[in-house]
Image 1 (cartoon, rainbow, N blue to C red):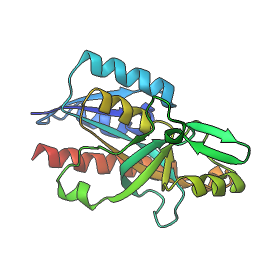
Image 2: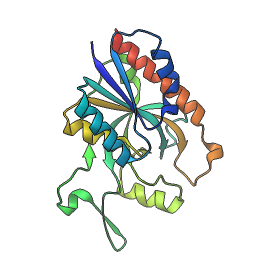
Image 3: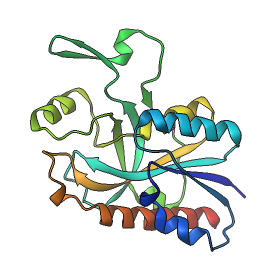
Image 4: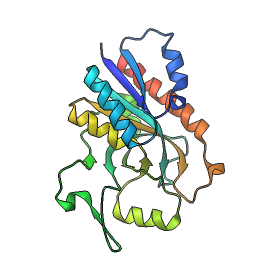
Length: 211
């Protein structure tokens, strides 16, 4: 039996699954944590929870934007690495990444616990960036991608990864794509589909862990 912590920024992202698992007895113990949006709130909430209770696995789940149109809207992906993309310094027009500054701190996270289960293994593997400001400008998107080799962006992923690694807690991150990262046009987003597929995909992962 495993103690599993499921982390989302908002309850809306996981409400369907949360309601179902409140009435169905499963093999493993599930705890749901909603941190609020952004890396600061997330780091605080996750740290507080992991200091209070030991978990065998943390699953960070949520919706995200994709820089690549090779990923479909609504598609569920598994994050293999995440980075605090804005951490660094400007030198005129050049961006200096945090590791090049030779300062103490945390920047890149890629030591995730890989679940060896068929459904999880079938998910497309991506590199993620965690940002304070989601992109919506053609020029800034191009500049960003010239600096960072990433596929999706969220506002919480690296914060969860950092705390889990510091607390030596196994974790994975899955994201469902709600939109492409372009000039902001919410009419082209499909949050409802992304949330639906996130809940269904996470249920499959949990069902496999129950086997």
